[in-house]
Image (cartoon, rainbow, N blue to C red; front, top):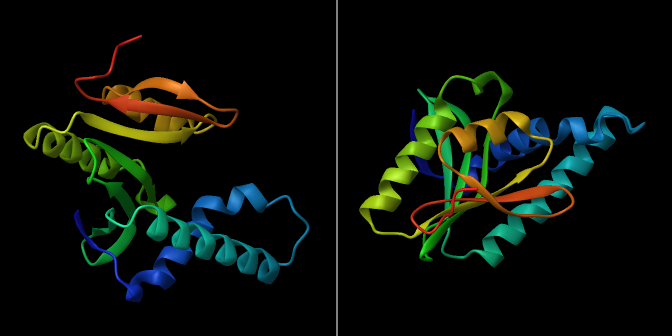
Length: 159
Protein backbone atom coordinates (compact mmCIF):
# COMPACT_ATOMS: atom_id res chain seq x y z
CA UNK A 1 0.00 0.00 0.00
CA UNK A 2 1.26 3.45 -0.89
CA UNK A 3 -0.03 6.99 -0.79
CA UNK A 4 0.85 9.82 -3.11
CA UNK A 5 -0.43 13.34 -3.69
CA UNK A 6 -3.58 13.30 -5.80
CA UNK A 7 -3.45 15.29 -9.02
CA UNK A 8 -5.98 16.54 -11.53
CA UNK A 9 -5.31 13.34 -13.49
CA UNK A 10 -6.92 11.44 -10.59
CA UNK A 11 -10.27 13.27 -10.77
CA UNK A 12 -11.99 10.51 -12.81
CA UNK A 13 -11.00 7.91 -10.20
CA UNK A 14 -11.95 10.22 -7.32
CA UNK A 15 -15.40 10.68 -8.88
CA UNK A 16 -15.75 6.92 -9.26
CA UNK A 17 -14.77 6.51 -5.61
CA UNK A 18 -17.24 9.19 -4.48
CA UNK A 19 -20.04 7.46 -6.42
CA UNK A 20 -19.14 4.14 -4.76
CA UNK A 21 -19.06 5.71 -1.30
CA UNK A 22 -22.36 7.57 -1.70
CA UNK A 23 -24.37 5.24 -3.93
CA UNK A 24 -26.44 3.79 -1.08
CA UNK A 25 -27.57 7.29 -0.08
CA UNK A 26 -29.32 7.81 -3.43
CA UNK A 27 -30.15 4.23 -4.43
CA UNK A 28 -33.80 4.49 -3.36
CA UNK A 29 -34.45 7.62 -5.41
CA UNK A 30 -36.27 6.82 -8.65
CA UNK A 31 -33.63 8.26 -10.97
CA UNK A 32 -32.13 6.70 -14.04
CA UNK A 33 -28.52 5.50 -13.69
CA UNK A 34 -27.42 8.56 -15.70
CA UNK A 35 -29.31 10.96 -13.41
CA UNK A 36 -27.84 9.27 -10.35
CA UNK A 37 -24.31 9.51 -11.77
CA UNK A 38 -24.80 13.15 -12.77
CA UNK A 39 -26.07 14.02 -9.29
CA UNK A 40 -23.21 12.23 -7.52
CA UNK A 41 -20.65 13.79 -9.86
CA UNK A 42 -22.03 17.26 -9.12
CA UNK A 43 -21.89 16.51 -5.38
CA UNK A 44 -18.27 15.39 -5.76
CA UNK A 45 -17.44 18.61 -7.60
CA UNK A 46 -19.00 20.71 -4.82
CA UNK A 47 -17.25 18.75 -2.08
CA UNK A 48 -13.91 18.85 -3.88
CA UNK A 49 -14.08 22.62 -4.40
CA UNK A 50 -15.08 23.10 -0.76
CA UNK A 51 -12.20 20.98 0.58
CA UNK A 52 -9.62 22.72 -1.60
CA UNK A 53 -10.90 26.20 -0.67
CA UNK A 54 -11.51 25.57 3.05
CA UNK A 55 -8.36 23.53 3.67
CA UNK A 56 -5.72 24.98 1.34
CA UNK A 57 -2.84 23.45 3.30
CA UNK A 58 -4.30 19.95 3.56
CA UNK A 59 -2.75 16.91 1.94
CA UNK A 60 -5.04 15.34 -0.66
CA UNK A 61 -3.64 11.84 -1.02
CA UNK A 62 -4.47 8.94 -3.31
CA UNK A 63 -4.24 5.48 -1.75
CA UNK A 64 -2.84 2.78 -4.02
CA UNK A 65 -2.60 -0.97 -3.63
CA UNK A 66 0.08 -1.95 -6.09
CA UNK A 67 -0.61 0.08 -9.22
CA UNK A 68 -4.36 0.18 -8.60
CA UNK A 69 -5.99 3.25 -7.05
CA UNK A 70 -7.86 2.09 -3.95
CA UNK A 71 -9.06 5.20 -2.15
CA UNK A 72 -8.34 8.64 -0.80
CA UNK A 73 -7.02 10.18 2.40
CA UNK A 74 -7.44 13.91 2.93
CA UNK A 75 -5.70 15.22 6.04
CA UNK A 76 -4.87 18.70 7.31
CA UNK A 77 -1.55 18.57 9.14
CA UNK A 78 -1.08 22.34 9.19
CA UNK A 79 -2.69 22.64 12.62
CA UNK A 80 -1.64 21.38 16.05
CA UNK A 81 -4.38 18.75 16.16
CA UNK A 82 -4.36 17.17 12.72
CA UNK A 83 -7.75 16.71 11.09
CA UNK A 84 -8.76 13.88 8.76
CA UNK A 85 -11.16 15.47 6.31
CA UNK A 86 -11.95 12.23 4.55
CA UNK A 87 -10.80 8.66 4.27
CA UNK A 88 -12.49 6.30 1.85
CA UNK A 89 -11.74 3.06 0.06
CA UNK A 90 -13.43 1.34 -2.84
CA UNK A 91 -15.57 -1.54 -1.53
CA UNK A 92 -13.21 -4.12 -3.06
CA UNK A 93 -10.34 -2.80 -0.90
CA UNK A 94 -12.17 -2.69 2.43
CA UNK A 95 -11.52 -5.12 5.29
CA UNK A 96 -7.96 -5.75 4.14
CA UNK A 97 -6.17 -3.74 6.84
CA UNK A 98 -5.49 -0.76 4.56
CA UNK A 99 -7.32 1.82 6.69
CA UNK A 100 -5.74 0.40 9.85
CA UNK A 101 -2.26 0.70 8.33
CA UNK A 102 -2.92 4.25 7.13
CA UNK A 103 -4.33 5.42 10.45
CA UNK A 104 -1.60 3.81 12.57
CA UNK A 105 1.01 5.38 10.28
CA UNK A 106 -0.70 8.75 10.72
CA UNK A 107 -0.79 8.26 14.50
CA UNK A 108 2.94 7.49 14.53
CA UNK A 109 3.70 10.56 12.43
CA UNK A 110 1.56 12.73 14.72
CA UNK A 111 3.43 11.43 17.77
CA UNK A 112 6.83 11.94 16.14
CA UNK A 113 6.04 15.53 15.19
CA UNK A 114 4.45 16.29 18.56
CA UNK A 115 1.05 17.06 17.09
CA UNK A 116 -1.49 17.15 19.90
CA UNK A 117 -3.67 14.54 18.23
CA UNK A 118 -5.91 13.68 15.32
CA UNK A 119 -9.59 14.46 14.86
CA UNK A 120 -12.19 13.24 12.40
CA UNK A 121 -15.94 13.03 11.88
CA UNK A 122 -17.75 9.77 11.21
CA UNK A 123 -21.36 9.08 10.33
CA UNK A 124 -23.30 7.62 13.24
CA UNK A 125 -24.48 4.72 11.07
CA UNK A 126 -20.98 3.77 9.87
CA UNK A 127 -20.53 0.95 12.37
CA UNK A 128 -17.46 -0.51 10.66
CA UNK A 129 -15.56 2.78 10.78
CA UNK A 130 -16.66 3.42 14.37
CA UNK A 131 -15.29 0.01 15.43
CA UNK A 132 -12.01 0.71 13.64
CA UNK A 133 -11.55 4.16 15.16
CA UNK A 134 -12.38 2.96 18.66
CA UNK A 135 -9.99 0.02 18.29
CA UNK A 136 -7.24 2.51 17.36
CA UNK A 137 -7.89 4.63 20.44
CA UNK A 138 -10.13 7.35 19.04
CA UNK A 139 -12.77 8.59 21.47
CA UNK A 140 -16.00 10.44 20.82
CA UNK A 141 -15.89 14.05 21.98
CA UNK A 142 -18.82 15.62 20.20
CA UNK A 143 -21.81 14.78 18.08
CA UNK A 144 -24.38 16.12 15.70
CA UNK A 145 -27.60 14.60 14.50
CA UNK A 146 -25.73 12.58 11.86
CA UNK A 147 -22.05 12.39 12.93
CA UNK A 148 -19.72 11.81 15.84
CA UNK A 149 -16.56 13.87 16.23
CA UNK A 150 -13.71 11.66 17.39
CA UNK A 151 -10.22 12.45 18.60
CA UNK A 152 -7.04 10.56 19.28
CA UNK A 153 -4.01 11.86 21.11
CA UNK A 154 -2.54 13.17 24.30
CA UNK A 155 -5.32 15.70 24.88
CA UNK A 156 -8.10 13.12 24.54
CA UNK A 157 -9.90 12.13 27.67
CA UNK A 158 -11.14 8.57 27.80
CA UNK A 159 -14.86 8.15 28.50
